[in-house]
Image (cartoon, rainbow, N blue to C red):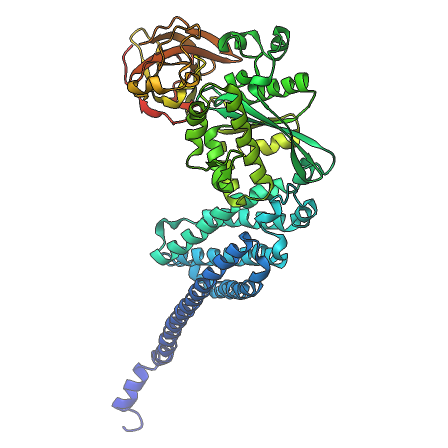
Length: 614
């Protein structure tokens, strides 16, 4: 029995024999799974700790680099780059450590993590940008020593060191490329999802690059051609024309003091000086050879024959051509480039040169120059036009001398030129294509209304037609609107309001040079101002009407090449406002919004939207 019947234990063992290996496998496998998960978690934690540590390293290194970068920049701009060598070396070390910390496969993997990734990507871009700027722009600049600074462009005793300029060209080229790339890289960062500290770092580097890059780009484009412009290959002539906005003109103001400047082998000198009054009237044949008849009819008789009124057009190239040709005809001098400067632009430049002392001992600075040049001179020399011209000539010559004798802050000067160009208060035109390209790059070419994909642009320009300097007291308001009319047409209405801010009680104390003398043929009461409003309508539109609170006897319509132009009239007594209204039919044009371009004046106009019915 014992041999034939299995025991209870042996039966139990046989019934579980098939499952036993699988259970053993499970028991052996689960520790490895748990261990793998633990190891993975440990790896993630370790990676996070590693990335966090590296991020702190980047933060510390960039924070250490920031004051050094500022110090080096200040020393270079001050012409003391040689004293910045030690700072530049330490700065380079900090930048390299920051870049190294924000690199590698673990950092790259961390950048792929939602939420955290964009912040780490931004940190990496900032670190790489700082490193590139330091290694490829800052260090090479410092290595040049004091040769590379704004002072390399500054004249000394009337001359610019052409050899010094040529020696810095490679570094300027490389630095400009690096800064432009840095601007693009940092500008491409989306800061909307970044945490505060990272966003601040991006904003700081963006601000730093944005501050330096434009000036460096200007220097890069200017430096290679500057020797030629300064007469390295032979003398170059330039005409500087100083406008006076007290007698407003579409380009800016009546043409007053004029200076012929000659550059030869880096030395720039005043060759001749003249006032607009000194030029004789040109012939009708001369005017007709330079201007189309419609332009002469639009701007009236002085245009094209009188030097002072070459600025009656808003076209810089036309005004420059007339001025250049009159100098050639009457003084036997050819100047490829003509530059126009109004009193406000001159005040910006005086901020860079500092105050200038005139031959009579008076002091002219950025705060008082506009009031003196547009009003005070005519009171000081109330009966002597020659003395006025002599004063303006002294101002022009002394200001030019301050620049050429090195008494100028170059960064401030560049800022002044840029600002004046943006406001179209400093304009230029040249028949030399190299110079003209620079003029366009610097934004000094001026412009007329332009058509865009979304807007029609109109131009509004004012011009004194009294022969006075009353526009010192002129303030303007311009309202523009567009409406669909009940007759099916679509019209743009432009209302130009001129206010004469002169106190009526002050009229008797003014020089007749300011008031226009009253005996000028217009029978205008003393103290009144009288201006024409030129409205340039979009190409393809039609001037529908010209009306106003002032008699529109002298109003007219015409064309300036492809622009329809309306000339309205405004006459305002002291303390009064008057309005000219121009309606433009734009039915033939696609419907777009309307923008307004206004010519330069002493005071910018108040701009408003106009609601009207038609």
